[in-house]
Amino acid sequence: MSASRSTQHFHELPLMLFTALGITGAGVAATHPVAFAFGFVPWVPARPEALLAALLTGSGLLISLLHLGRPARLTRALSQTGSNPLSNEVFAACLSLIMCLCIRFIPGGSGVVNLLWGIAASSALFFLISLGWVYRLPGQLFWTGLTVLSPALLGIVFGLLALSAYEQRANTKIVTAILGLLAVDAGMQIVRWIRLERRRCEGQPAHPRIFGDRHHILMVRFLSVTVLTPFAFLAAMPTIALIILGLGILHDRFAFYVLALQQTPESEIARLEELLHVQYRSIDAER
Image (cartoon, rainbow, N blue to C red; front, side):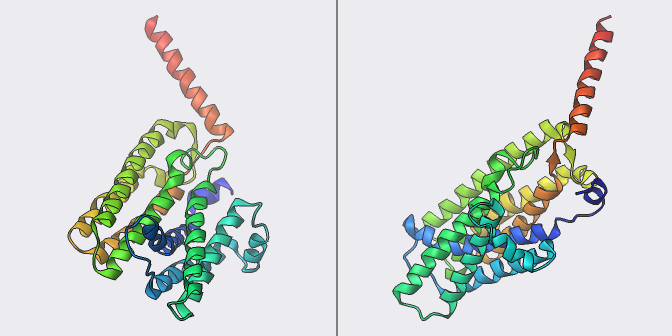
């Protein structure tokens, strides 16, 4: 990636859309079986959930082809499944999509459907986890730490909200889980914000012009996910809360890419020069 390209164009748009749609789709696919495992709901995953998960995940995969450049590269990426983290992520998304499509068209009430739901949920969970880990790259200061857990947290919350919107009700366990996960996410984002401010001089921003608005970007993310989503949910508007969270997840992925900080030799030299400058000023002041 050339410096001019990263500063003038937001070329990560296909990735942003793919990951946002992938998080929401995987969240829907994984949540009902997970909620059942924790005793939140009975085991009755419905076809509309499978259809929603398939639409979201399928749309994300389709958009990802724009990032790959040529559709044939998707096949090449899948051929490295097992040895490449990115290939594992794409494989998990494709497997979840296929299982959800099968669930949508196979008659319900059979053991086959239950098996398909298990595979869809497992692959969706794997996708959510791997999505965070695949970006743990050397020298990327904003993509480490608690950031790796964000896709899984947001995906599960989106799935629980979708479950509440579909059933038009939410029991105490689901409400507690949603609010608890959002509280954990809020704490993670505060830590992330503090780390970004402390380390912003250690790296080169991928998008310097946008990076200057980082406070506004992170504030919008905080308001949409942490404030407005639970407000709408507690106001008995789960569908509105679901839409707000969906937009919040999209904004989260935007913030993830535009606030990337790459530690480079140039940024390290600049940081050392700044430290020396501060030290020299201190010495001059003492004289």
